[in-house]
Image (cartoon, rainbow, N blue to C red; front, side, top):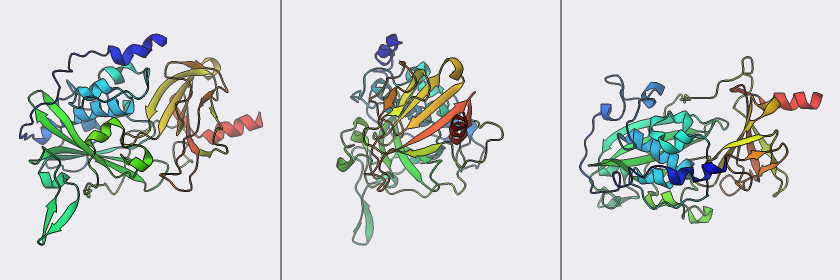
Length: 359
């Protein structure tokens, strides 16, 4: 599997100049330029809308968003370059996923192949919006509202709003707005913002993260969140196992250096960021082998001190250490999120734990 370590570097550079940042134009795009939806339907997009194919990384704002998410989540700077966001340093060497399509053509994939596991997702189409819709700090000047504009983009931008509800914390939703402009070569990302307090803050040691160069702080949030949060996708559940409230368990870790161990032997198939708007937390996904070849274990909030994607590990080998979440979530300390899948169906991890105790 070591040959996969050069996978990112080997991704074609055909589009690097094609999608380099250029002078923006005053773009005006109809709804059908983003995705197809019924006439008069201005609500959130449906799953079929999000599956609309893209012919290139900058074909539409939605295609550009997929490319950007793959860049950020899987530490693949060359993908950011393809949507006009250049000079993003790679944080970790080697591949972050064995899913080569994610690193090769993410704009062709459905969102469940790009986003971290277990998350619901809403995307709202803001369309081509005037500058005031994405201004930063609002101030009162002579009784009239005034706005600090995003430099060089005072005439407006195309906005997509991504809502990411935590499936295991009721009512907790993070909102990310991404802004795009169209050039002669395609759609480029020009700015983004997040409702997450830790995004691009010096005190959280996130300000030096490459995507923070385009971060807009204190964005005035738009009131578009759906009242009935519906998952765009979710791993199918094992029949009859519907009594647990979320896809996994949160397990408190007692000691700072207490490692998270592999529950069975297998191959690390993914190392990704947990969120696209903050680089603090990670996922690690283990595919089992032999008697556990039908099992998959997913751990969130585990650092990258363990094996890299593509590496085989034995049972009980350390996958990493639990990450410190106290700074963003006071009182939480260190805990991990665990999910288990059997034959592609999510199962209640407590069931397996009870079975093992009985044995």
